[in-house]
Length: 334
Image (cartoon, rainbow, N blue to C red):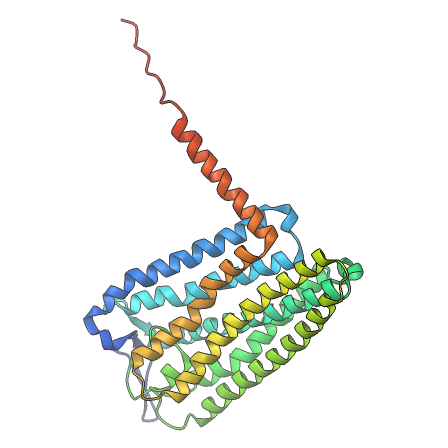
């Protein structure tokens, strides 16, 4: 049974039903296996690269630690979305309270913005490493990194909190069914009654301002980095610098293209079915989590070498266990 409050004759639902991919109706249960498989792959691949960075002392450097943090955020983002998605495919477990819905909304958007802020810190790290290589260890210290990451978390909170705060003040009287697998902002706002123009304006302004500022900062950083890389006299060092920047740029392209394409289609293709919008949301939320560890694992030479060594050791151990003769059973004396 849905819950609602009556305050000054303003009805407002306080719990909702998450209905992901409503067009599939009873066939939604068939989506459990593919999305569960994607989630397990995301957790496994990201955790493998994180384990490699943490276990190898030679990788305890700012760039690799930032990569590990980025992949840890990927696991958190997928964990915030996928379990709720799987529950939304079942009518028995799909109900969510307004408080939990707002917490999930905050976590989803906070992790997305924090992900982008980590990319900004990475860009600064590469800028110092390539443009001021002799002073790198002096400039990029653990204290500086901690301060930058703290500022990134604070910036993410300041960007997301107003949107979620305004959403918490809205009355929801149209329906108690959210046609989405997660508490996405616009999906929840569709259930509102009354004027929500302020919510839409703040949400759109924050998103555009954040994206434009991030792109300007990233563009300025990597243009300087690439210009400095081409001036490196050593061909090997130049190739390594450009390869590292290439990995970061691929990740940036994956994250920003997925979020921007989903946003554009959501506003332009209003005649598209709700299932299409749900699929686009799943695409922009889960694709970076799946692709980022593959990019860094395949393109970062040091991580790739340690991963290859790890697989060889595991393969050798399995082969040794197969070749080992079974234990002999001696006959007990009579």
